[in-house]
Image (cartoon, rainbow, N blue to C red; front, side, top):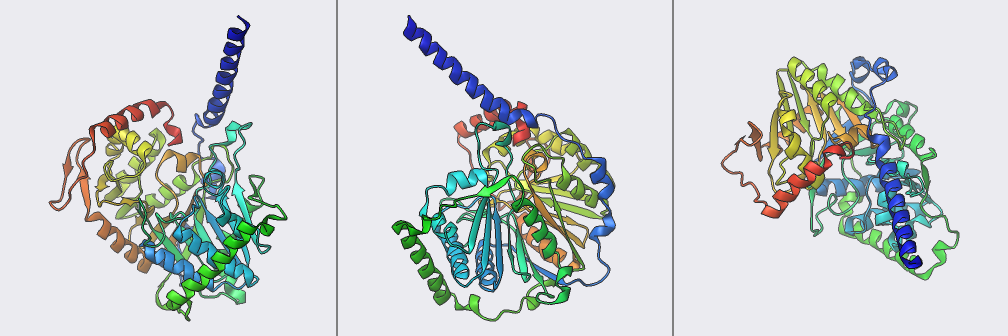
Length: 479
């Protein structure tokens, strides 16, 4: 009898703990935060428009190979400081490449700071010599944003979704690419994503006028996150670098960096960024609050306010769209004032986010009712880029997906660039992608170009998408 009682007690305790974790993790986000009056009053459209050529020049990195190339090129130019912030860093060939160069620069006396989302750090970095070899170098610091603590489940949903690299006051990369083989280079990998970044070059680097660059705004943002109570060091063991396996891994990385230089000497030669970049008149950074709790939708609000200024067209590229009533209403209001408004996202068949796709099946009609012209991308590889074009001058590029997580839960960054030349460059990339899109007519009808072959889904996946989408309707604020 006592054994049965003990068994039931254990089961009850387990269930109580499970409910504590689940409720604690989701309850803080049930209620959507509203845009504060402070945020509304702080927005001025004039802050995003320039009246003369600025110190920053920019270019789009549209391919995974160009992203790898420019990382190697830019990192090699560092003499004082490198900052790398990423949502997801995993073992792989491209990651080893990047870390080998960071370690080489650390050996040369460059101060390296790496910031990674806490869940990604726990799942992808812990227990792996590759990351310990870099973290243990005296010139390298690695921190995790919001390290998981199950005793405080209300903090577990707070994710850092930022992705950027800063090198000295020379320049920076910012966009949607994570740090592993899906996004960088052309290594063999089970999956691959198309993505988009912007490279910004500070023409005044090394001078007193260097402070005019938008790089300083991004660096100030990084410092705020890095110094916040939400970040803690990845590993600080003093004897970590004395372990034989760590020493061996460090030696392999140093050798790897030399091998990269031997194979790609073109990336180590003198390079004139001014010849391959576009002039800009203004670049501004917009960001969500950095707290790990529910956030007011700062990035979405400011993006919408900028879209409202359009006189002719707005074009949005997002991997997926998960919106609520407030977001749909704001998008509908933009559409009512803008003659041509287009939304491009992955089709359910082409996308790689199961949860977002399952939600789209249930809420597609709400997006259609905003009045936007909707296109679904069916190019065969999931498109992961996040961009907005406003008329022929403003371009927004960054990490923000048009979903509820990016709007109300995660940290996010978008660069707002005032440049007709960059706008035209981005428009050309968007045009190329949209050739493999079909236009949404109704929930179940499309206008499909002849060359597009929509990927067939097995019955089990169709059923699972529908079932999961239905189950998640009460928790879609976490998608």
